[in-house]
Image 1 (cartoon, one colour):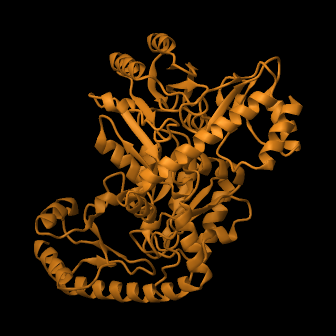
Image 2 (tube, helix red, strand yellow; image 1 turned 180 degrees about the vertical axis):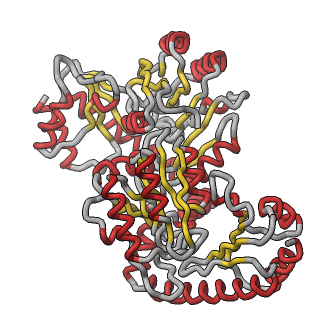
Image 3 (cartoon, helix red, strand yellow; image 1 turned 90 degrees about the horizontal axis):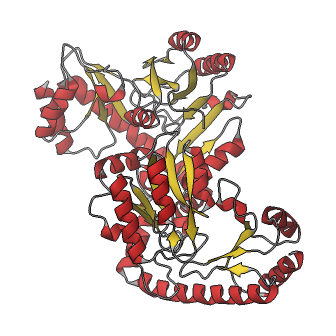
Amino acid sequence: MLTRPGDTVAIESPTYYGLLQVIESLGLKALEIPTDPIQGLSLEALTLALERWPVAACVMVPNFSNPLGTRMPDSRKQALLRLLTDHDVPLVEDDIYGDLSLSGTRPLPIKAWDRDGLVYYCSSCSKTLSAGMRVGWLVPGRDFQRAQYLQFINTVSVATPSQLALAHFLEKGHYDRYLRRVRSLHAKAVARMTDRVTELFPTKTRVSRPEGGFVLWLELPGRVNTTELAERALDAGVNFAPGALFSASGKFDHCLRLNCAVRWDNRVERALTRLAALL
Amino acid sequence: MLTRPGDTVAIESPTYYGLLQVIESLGLKALEIPTDPIQGLSLEALTLALERWPVAACVMVPNFSNPLGTRMPDSRKQALLRLLTDHDVPLVEDDIYGDLSLSGTRPLPIKAWDRDGLVYYCSSCSKTLSAGMRVGWLVPGRDFQRAQYLQFINTVSVATPSQLALAHFLEKGHYDRYLRRVRSLHAKAVARMTDRVTELFPTKTRVSRPEGGFVLWLELPGRVNTTELAERALDAGVNFAPGALFSASGKFDHCLRLNCAVRWDNRVERALTRLAALL
């Protein structure tokens, strides 16, 4: 809806590899904006990018981005929206992790401050209730009818049984109870994984402190290449996401992502011990 | 998977308007090949088109195309595949109506003769069991892994509950019984609608004789414009699909499509009488 092949799209860096694949398949160019684990996307870098290049759209996960787990502060969300408004660049806001705050406080999406229809807000129940239901939604910005038309000709609709099941679940109030439980489980899992990594991994390993979601981002000391490490780890039966996946331009070779949304048992303990030994 | 923006795609004419919308949204050009209600797509016209223009792909509904309801004869299906093979042009075969033969005989898809992986076979349960389930499938031609990759990054998967429900329905043998009933209902509905149109509409109206599916294609005598007629009919509470919808180049102004998959009652009778009066 917002781009044509050849256009440039500004994204967070590191970012979810699925987004990089979509950008590539649509013939678009990814412009990676450095993103800080605490402050979120660098507004300074984005300002420079918007002044220098024609950016067709910006795609972001301001609440608990994958892999950093950052919650962009509200003041920076508003500043980002002002910046995009000044340059008339639309924002695709992916809020798929927004309900998964580890503290329990649901942060506002940037869409909350959108007065000009510049924000195309997307979300889904895939990261909360069930990825298999394939229920997602879009609150489009300026051109609702065009969005509806493209939705229709591309997918007609989301599967009706899934929509009805989700509607029933929400109506009965189950979702809020479910969220409370799952947030608390994720918080424990992230804390436990952080503790084990701190104990087992090389001393100068840096670990993200996610405010939401269920993944950890690790920066390893020295000259380790995590893509090679991933191959050796897989031979030892251990799977993780190497850092290079999260960039289109070969960054983050010394980083990796751990998924904490696993049933914690001896297998996880052994896997972490093996990975640490390989390191 | 098979095209880039600017490419030309050969299609049947008349064709389903949803396909025209998809072609437009992907920035492709539609090359309309005349299609006969008895013989199907004109191989002579397609031969000419393939010799004269670079055609990236061909998209067809050889079994009971919408709106004509044509079943392309097997000998012509094989000739079409040979022609496409000679020009190395892939065929996207949409077999969504293939199970809805009015006689009860399930025709073979062109994919049945495909030895070179030139045919990308698509189908769905949307026209048989339920459009709301959103379950479809693809048997790709040459590049299975690329198809799987694009499916994954575009939709990840079909909703799991829908897939499991359909699998269960098939496993228990309900689908075959269901098909027998629904085919017989469609056959009766098509026959009844044909009878009423013959009685009520202008004498030189030509009506298709679909071999499958549940729509009728009408060619009206004289200089009637069915797009204008559709507006006036809608004011009178009557809805049909005007012929112009089925072409990207303004053909079929004097044609219209009637959907027979309706519960037959006095409202349908009154609607047909009103439409005939407007004509």
